[in-house]
Amino acid sequence: MSRQTAPPSTAPTTRVSGTLSLTDVVAQSVGFMGPVFSVSILLPQLVGITTATGNGAGAAAPLAVLIGTIGMLAIGWIVAAYARRIHAAGSLYNYVTDGFGARLGAAAGYVYYLGVLVLGAGIAVLIGGTLYDNLKAEFGFDAVPVWAWQLIVLAVLVAIVHIGVQVSVKVQLALALVSMVVLAVFFVYMIIKVGGDNSLTPFKPSSSAQGLSGIAFSVIYGVLLFTGFEAAANLAEETADSKHSIPRAVLISLLVSAAFFLLGCYAQIAGFHFDVSAVAENAGAPLVALASPGAYGATWLARLVELVILLDMLAVYIGVSVSVTRGVLTMARDGWLPRPLARVSARRGTPIGGTMVVGGAYLLIVLVSQAFPKAVSVPGLPDYFSWYAWLSAFGIICLAAIYLTLCLGAPRGLRGQVAPAKVWAAATIGVVITGGALFGAVYHVPAPTIWAAWAAIGWAVLALAAGFLVKSRTAVAR
Image: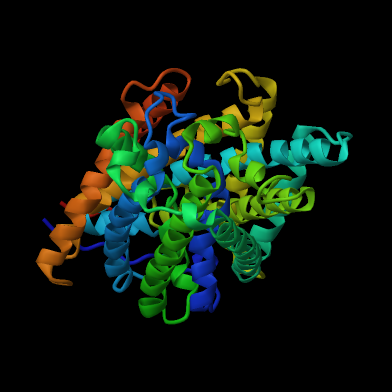
């Protein structure tokens, strides 16, 4: 059975253009991960306060992040190894294809890019609601409704994505860099203020009220922090010296984000004096609470923190959307999606079909969330946040499933490229971590969140069927 994959078409209308630098592609991965946004929104889940099951690591949340970091570094090593040899815009779709063949690779592509698209749709809903609530709470401004903010930001996003990746990655870099620097300074300030009460107990299993089981469950959220780390690989065709820049970008992004996540998680736990009940009292926005007037902050600082979280959310929005446009381009070019979706702007060199898919899908989800605000409602959460939580759950399950598939195929896909022992070690760690994350995503999870898991599983089944039924121009001959 042949394992070769036909090269993508070189037709001018299906090729993206650009000469991105290492810094640019690092910005794409960091922008997708959204370190500021992630560390601010996931602390309650890591602790176990707002999880669907009530399980969590408690004060040992930093240990869960550390374990998740180890697993994601193993997966990152696999991605970097593939990126040294495969320089296409399809990222994990291309890598799974190399490990399992074209048809299973196509199924992985359907799952991966729909998951990323739905993640972006979740941000499309969330960002408008967050803007509305912040402006109303801080300045009493509520003249522009939530849906209008959602559409305004969507219009800005589509313009940025269409103008070109050179612009989008620089916007992401500026947004992410400013946000991370501001919060890193604040985190260090909090740790200094805690002074002699600082402790390594958050890195000890004994500090979790639920013991190792609670920590193991929270590793799910430790993995979620890193979702999208591989996004730099989607820009391989547009990167100068992609053979070296993309692998470096993936690993640099992981390491920088890991340091920030560990610092941010520990600083917040220490800021609440290692008291889980104090985190629970501020579960809606723990980071903003720490920055508010009191031991660590002031009104201006709380507003600044709200602003940088919003800026990083916008960076995530852009990073996710850029990844989808390149994925749609590659899969359409390879024949797994309609050929017109492979069109590229002759003037801008950006994917026209992918941009239309992104804009149309986001608009549809915004309209549906407005028409049926209570469809996936979670008590105590704003409707827009409930929609974001449901959509992100679907997307994250899809991505975790592809991380798992990537690891399973790595020993075959990387055979003869790197030392087998290293591949097997990295793949085993990746399978354990992502497999555990997927188990936690469905075990004892109540409605409506469990519906997202079942929807993701159903989509994976359909994608697998499509991979064998669709007649691609580049399908492997058997």
